[in-house]
Image 1: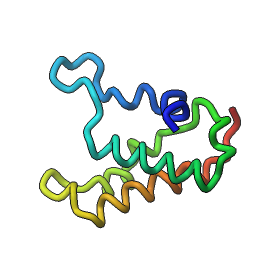
Image 2: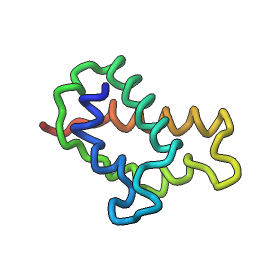
Image 3: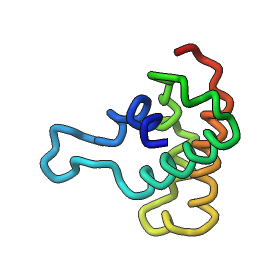
Image 4: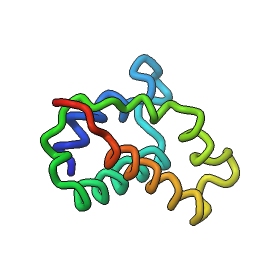
Length: 97
């Protein structure tokens, strides 16, 4: 799972590499990516072979909606929705290497 994440999400795990105060991704992105990837790989093991997949959906309006707002990002429903969003986006991915 970590190998897949490093090949496909490495640059995304650093939100703003030029900012001295916000160098790394927030916990809500980390949990969604790590757990969502693990579940997707469990369901579709062939994903492990993919490199440089299209992750533009991480910056989509739809994904931003499941992230929640500043004061409700940790509700169980939103956590589950974020993880499910990442898992489904990966499972539906049909691009090449």
